[in-house]
Length: 257
Image 1 (cartoon, rainbow, N blue to C red):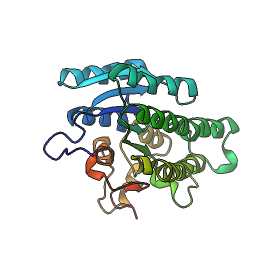
Image 2: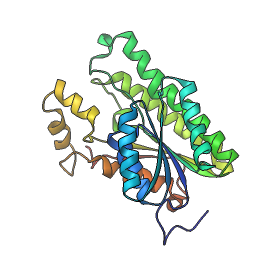
Image 3: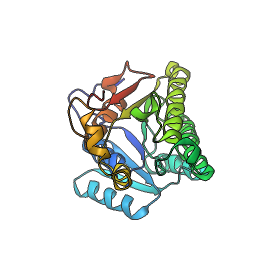
């Protein structure tokens, strides 16, 4: 374990971030770079990735980007390998990328939408974690991984049942990975954001007007989160300052009731 108490939270680390072109992933990439990490940004849309990477570079940080589709296992593995090729090692990874489908009761979800939820939000995360563990093990030796879940993964989720189900399964994978790789010094945790002002939530608001205000009213802070607030939790869990946290799925939800 290194002492980062007088340096940036992620000083000296190489970080891999999926879903990094916008929202929580982009906010995390910017934050990780400010905190001293060299960052590889991964997502499907290259122009978004390039814009965020250039912004980080202009601010004095170090960032590269790679196009990655979580529905394509080969693409995911190649993206993780690119981090090692570019920076020589991998220390930490933030598996934030995900996809969403329109809200609907379970019996009205098209089978193709359910399959997409599985392919991206569960299998894609499994592929990413497996590749990241291998890369950390082969280079840095020890490290940390954080997966983005959702508060909608606990209890019933009648509005987004497939999304909630895959994220609940991701919680289980997170806990299992923590138990498996913790003994060799690779910690695995998750964060479960509440209502956050991302493109995904704005799209939900467009088809269900008032949903953001309704959800915000259910939190003790009476507001939605900014992506930067969620990124702060991920940064801490990836840093050495959370060195005794393993297998946790941390709620970052503003006190959602």
